[in-house]
Image (cartoon, rainbow, N blue to C red):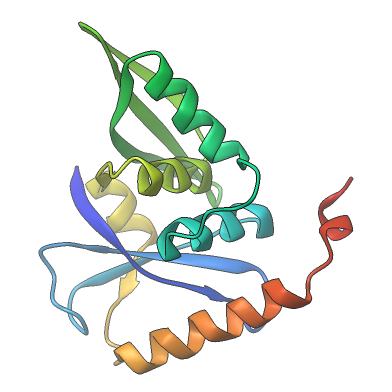
Length: 166
């Protein structure tokens, strides 16, 4: 498993779908690999709020999960993105509960949203990086990342909660 960080959260200009980009911690910006994972709008909102440290007036689902785990004396030890099949990523949340370790199957977006809230590390299987990563040679600068985040915030400001209802 490779320890990663969130390199960016942006909108795919072609699909308007949010994409979270992960990068191995040991690789310098502009070098190595990036792992893009397309996610849903609600999960992107949850991740963005957590990254910014924003506190919603009422708990979101991931805030509720955090509260439940903490109330039970448990914590998220780590998140692992374990495999990718036909373009779908799979993840596990590793929870420490007293003397037990519990592995829970989850979507990467939910896993990441919870990991941020619980200050848990995120790992990606080397096989996933080998099969789904792209070279980090795009020359993305910190200003570019800020621009992407600003564009995503503008999208979130304009979105209607009814857009997410089925």
